[in-house]
Amino acid sequence: MIRVLVVDDSAVVRRILEDELSRLPDIQVVATAADPFEARDLIAIHGPDVITLDIEMPKMDGLSFLERIMRSHPMPVVVVSSLTQGNNAAALRALALGAVEVVPKPGASWSVPDVAQRLARAIRAASVASLERLEARPPSPPVPGVAEGMAALLNRGNGGTPSTRMIVIGASTGGTRAVETLLAGLPADSPGMVVVLHMPAGFTKSYADRLDSILPLHVVEAEDGALVTPGTVLVAPGGYHLVMRKAGGRCTVHLRAGPPVHHQRPAVDVFFRSVARSVGGDAVGVLLTGMGADGAKGMLEMREAGSYTVAEHESTCVVYGMPRVAVELGAAVDVLPLGEIGEAVLKAARSGTDGVARTRTAATRPSPSRPPHRGGNREGVAP
Image (cartoon, rainbow, N blue to C red; front, side):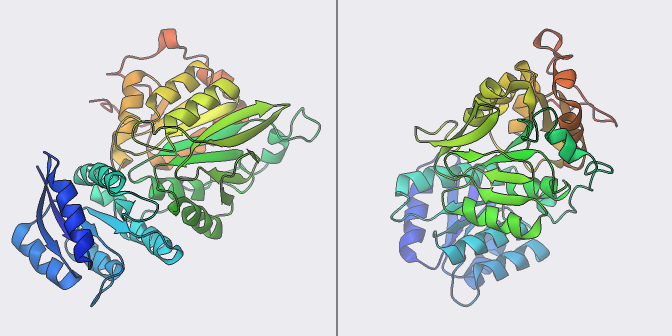
């Protein structure tokens, strides 16, 4: 049973969240609090496993309270925030401070059942998250010598037209920090990249804008028909599935409606499968930290289509869920700690993925108990 403390200044929101969560057999709301000072006392009394936290509250704002919690008594926190520009920026700050996930409040854009379902998944993920891996960590170091000759690589043989080589990344719980860490170690002229994260509509643009302001890469929220180009990172917008299309040597992404997959929209599986079918061996696939199985089957299709694929190693995952399933399926060519993934994917893009992935075909795929590795002592990844 996951014991939860709900912290929100709105009595209506507290009642709604308590009622909805109390319907679930594996979650128990042990108390609710109207402000951080009341919450502080209730934490001492009940010792909850997870806190849900509003951002805008009287006496002390949620960010200040979160910062104090993570400094003095670290515990899993899920931020529940209304969708406004200011709140979106604050929610991203909360993730930087150590919150596990951000969930929208019920309102015009989000119904109570939708929020309750998303919040329940976030609480379950938070209850098994590794808090120490949510702490601030340095970016992956830049790869020596990568920038030199990268432009020539990306433009080779096409009369100056960018090639279709690209890096595609999927992540969920803990993924906002993991993606930032990975991208921070890549040069400005890296291959075109597309990122699919499990984030609600409204937050993805704020996330892309923030990354664009701190990274040498150009980061934007993807629009329908956006072209994949070197040096640019497209972030899938919340609320839509993203698919890849290739025509005339140009790769574009397109937004699609449709039911959630793995309870998610965008879903990593939807995107990875479209990449496998449209780009094949010209793509490099990365699956980072996250709860559940989204992306694993899509990554398997990418590998079987000739892509080089890498799953994040358990030792650096906030939640070893999505990468674990990919390893069990044999979808990952390599299983690497976060700090080594940047170098691996850039080398694959430079040399061409075909020579890496197609030498390890489905017929010779290692068994789930002995996943492939590169360098170091990383045995025993699969459970």
